[in-house]
Image (cartoon, rainbow, N blue to C red):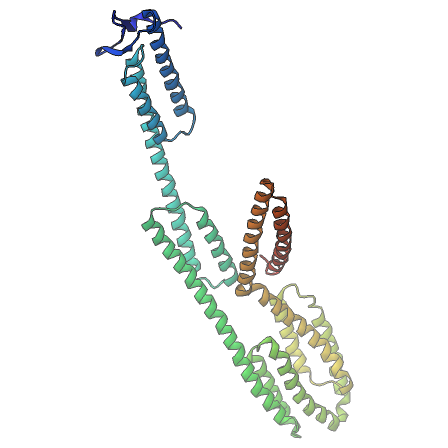
Length: 410
C-alpha cells in the first residue's frame, strides 16, 4: 500500500509529522532517503497497528480471552497509538480501542453476573441437599437412608464452593445431619444387640426350668408347664445366632426326656399318637411348601401359624418323632437362614466397611494406572512394567471387593 500524504508530512530537516484531531504530532526523524520513503515507512507502522487491533477485536469477539488479558493488550496498543510513531488515522485507532475497552468491560460484567448466577444456583442446590439430609437424619429406614446420604455427599462434592462463610455454615448443617443419623443408627443396632442378649439370658433360664421338669411324673401338670414354657420361649425373641440353636436343642431335649417317659407309660395312646403323626405329616408338607423362601415376612407368618397348629396336635410315636420334627426344623432353619441373610444384607456397618475398602482400592488402582501411563509415555519401560504388574494385583483385589459389595445389594 502506498503512503497517504494527507495524514503526514516531512519538513526540510527530515522531521516526520502526523496529523491528528489535536494538531500535528512529531512522529520521528528521517535522514535515510526521500520524504516519500519516510512517509511510506511510518505508514507501514500504522498498518501494523491496524492489523494488531483487528486481530485483538477478533479475539475478544470469538474466543474466551479473559478480560484481564484483553485489557493488558488494549493498554499496550494504546501506548503505541498515543506515542504517535506512525502515520495514519491514529484518532480512528484510538476510537476503536475505546470501543474495544467498552466491549471488554461489558464481557467482564456479563461474566461477573454469570458467575453470580452460578453461585446462586450452587447455593440453592446445597441448601436442598442440606434440607434433604436433615430430613433423612430422622429416618428409620437405615439401609435406604444411609445409601441416600452417601449419594448426597457425592452430589455435594460435584458442586462449586461458595463464599467461605456460607459454604462452611451449610456444610456444618449437612455434616451434623449425617452424624445425627449415624448416631441414631448405631443406637438402634446396639439396642437390637441388647435385646438379643436379654433373650439369651431369658432362654437360659427357660432351659434350666425345662431341665428341672424333665424327670417329673406328673404327666398332666408338667405337660401344661412345658406348654407355658414354650409360650415364654416364643415370646422371649431370638438370641444371638451363635447361641439360638444350642439353646433350642437343650430346651427341646429336656422336654423330650419328659414326653418320652410319658409316652412309655401311656403306650395305649399309640393310636392317638399315630393320628397325630398323620396330622403332623400334613403340617410338615404344608410347611415345606413355603420353601424356597421368596417373601420372608409371609413365610415367617405362615410358618408361625403352622407351628401353632403343630404344637396343638400333641406328640407322635417315638420312632417317628425325630423324622417328622426334623422336617419342620429344616423349614425353620431355612427361614432362620433367610432372616440371617437379610440381616447381613441390610447391615449398614458391614456394607460401609465393604464400600470403604472398595473406595480405597479404587483410588489405589487409579493412582497406579496414572503412574504406569506416565512412565510408559516418558519411555521408562522398566518402571512402567513394574507398575503395571502391581496394578494387576490391586485390580484383582478390587474385583474381589466389588464382588463382595454386590452381596449387600449395592
